[in-house]
Structures are given as structure tokens and as C-alpha cells.
Image (tube, rainbow, N blue to C red; front, top):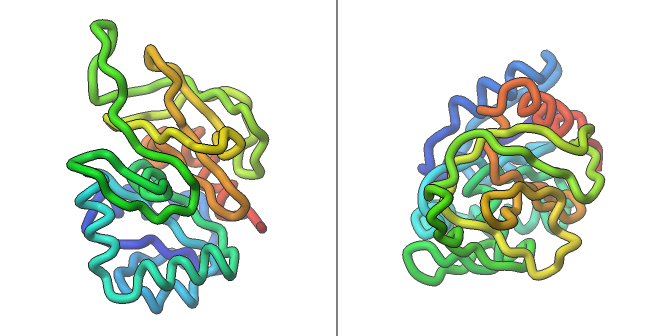
Length: 207
């Protein structure tokens, strides 16, 4: 099985790559690519990322054929897809960071800034409790701790697409999902044992 990690200039690739190596067996080939044609050969696709929505969607769309091939392999061929942090946010219809920007539009909704409060700091950084509200094959626990670093929140139009949340003086969307698509706002590659468990479950997920 081939697992593609998309390199679109957003960084954070090596930590995700190393985490996937830890949970994968020798039959799995994990590779980093910025070539859209490589996704046609992959069995599973991961879109990691750190940074601003505007910069990341621009970087992704700047790669020749990337969004067209992503639409083909994910929406039409239904290959399992995992978005991490900004990679999850890019699934939205719109992102409101650094202006108003179109996302991939696979899960309807918008990404807006976390509401300010005297009781919290922005960005939302550190460990927080994730509460699963909808069953999903890559999640085996109803509650767990994961590591977050973000300032924006994915507001889903259809609440059925919200798989898990966490509290930060407001409801934060922690995981979104739809058919073969799953996204985590937290970083599984930085979330120690539970993060590796989630990545392992994604690797073995047969949609």
C-alpha cells in the first residue's frame, strides 16, 4: 500500500512522515510528493500543514494539476484522505484568515477566528480533551487528550460532519469527516500514544 504525504510548502512534513513510519508495517510505502500525478498511484493521501489558510491554499493551488487530481482521487475514486491542522481547514468552503479565500469545498463550512476571551490565549496551543460525538472507524476512544496549535475554528454547515469537539471557552471543531474524508485540527504526530493510534487506524482503514 502506498501512502502519499503532500508537500505544498507548508512545513511539518518530517514529523508526520516519521510518525507514519512508526505505525506502518514494511508493506506500506510512505512518500512525500509535490507531484500531482503521484497521487494517482497512492492508496491513501495525507495533507498536513501549518501556517495561514491563505498561504496554504495558495501553495496547494500553485502546484500544477494538484486540486484537479485531488478532486479526482478523493471525490471520485474515494481514496481515504486525512487532513491535519491546516490540512483539515482547507477542506472547508471558505477561510477567513488573511481575507476571504476559497477552500477545497469538500466539507461545507467556514474557518473563522477563535472568539477572544479574557480567560483564554490565542492561539489555542497545548493539550486539550477531545470528545468524540460521532463514531468513526479510525477512532476507538470516546475521549482523549491531543495537542493543538491554531487560531481559527472550522464551523461546519452540516453538524453531521463534526466527528469530535473540544472546549476552549467555546466549542472547537476537533475532527471533521465525510465518507472517505477525515480531518483533525490537532496534530496526531505530536499527540504521543493516542496520535500514533489514530494514524495507525487511518493506515489500516478500508473505506
